[in-house]
Length: 123
Image (spheres, rainbow, N blue to C red):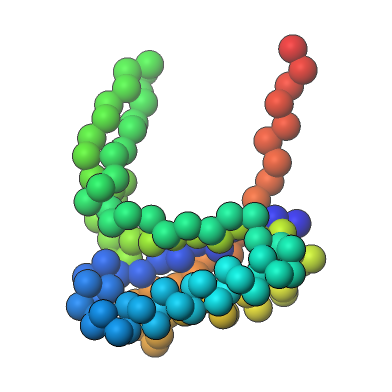
């Protein structure tokens, strides 16, 4: 079953980290990507640009409204994701615990959510 591991962290705390700490975190992500790749369960993984580079699209009554910036003001922002094809939730949770930006006792977390297939209708 596929799981999406959504990585939330504080952009302010990431910016405040030293270049060495940022390199250590990036190396941790590369290690998780390499290990899940060797296991054959890695389907995708990418960091996201800061929320200041986001664009939000809303649609109401067939009218489209496009605005700059994130969807909502939050203390934590979606920083990246992994999509892994795991045996079960327990395996997905084990991988989530290896992601180096998980919590650190303060801001940030990894949300693990199963995906579901959207089957196109024949037509």
